[in-house]
Length: 84
Length: 192
Image (cartoon, rainbow over all chains, first blue to last red; front, side):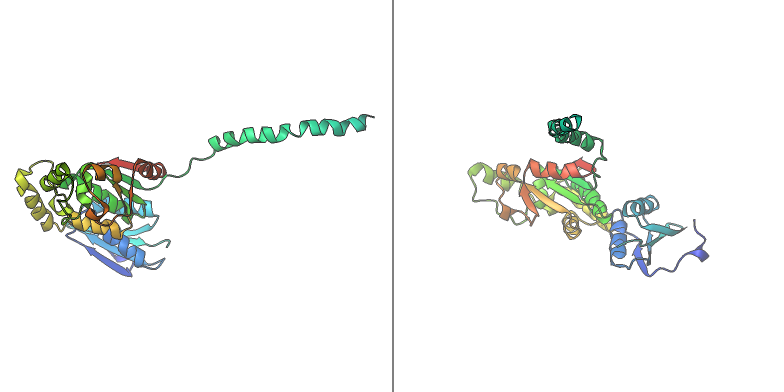
């Protein structure tokens, strides 16, 4: 887990708390699609599936995970958009 | 005179060279990297709410991961893309009876288990609503908005007395060759 003080500032914040699979990924994909290349997108979900789904999504879409933070049942990931 | 004989042997060899090259071409193709397969096809054969929900989950997840997705609706899966207000009468007697008994529609799919004459799906919808899970009609719209390719199987449409007007808008009405052409190009092919 990344130190919270070192987490990058997100240009776009996605609140997917309370949503279940596949909706956090759908919301994340929407946000990344509308963001600029190089921007950081933060997504937070309460679905623990995100802990595995976020890295899997990043591998498939070839975007980069630049941070992760969990507190209680809230799990956040920071993605950098690497390409259009 | 040795020099004079040289040109006569060259034309004799010349036709052999193109033949040798064309013989090499299939070998070269066989040793080349196979084309990259990417994306998903799902044959939606079932018309039950739980199975269809799983199919849409995969389709929407894949589309959100930037993968091409085709959903091919056949047999009971046609219930998913049948308009809830599709006409039930005006067909031959058997198909009319069939449509009255099983009208179809994404909003009235049964469960594979715990159906209890329709009570099960209502309970399940209530529970899923608590988790803000999209309903099947919402998933269908979501899939469409994510460019999931929706294909209706024409042969089973005919069997069940369905015309294009009885279905929600789809990308194409087609058969097995269309499905296979997509399946050949994709890495994941599912039958649900």
